[in-house]
Image: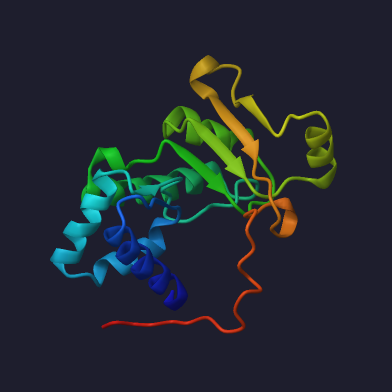
Length: 191
């Protein structure tokens, strides 16, 4: 949590300094721990960032569930818990419309159904795909597609899906690699 605390702290500071900056955040559990330690003035400033769309939550689940292993009840519960936190503290406009899952092991139609049909997501991206599937999709320019998660639910279970693609491990990441710029991270706690 320590490293995540400083990420959120730094992001909020930098967003407040420059109206041109935007940031997306995924897992609500870490954010909630940071939120509970903030004074009301800082919370209000953060609410403003969310309302302006400069701090955006994607996925919004309590954690980023591993979609191939858990029972659907746990998938629903953790998504619901995270979305309830967002609604309680930021209102309905903070509920995510899209998601990415950077490190899942497998991709289930249950997950696509949950996030598209039940949670209202417009898009679903992930960072790990079987290398054979990835190579076929890459060679055929099909790293993005419309996923029909349930035949019986029709178009309500369709979600725009895709593979994150970049230079990170596992075939995903940023086109800019900051990992080798500094040997040690600077962590500054202003409190």
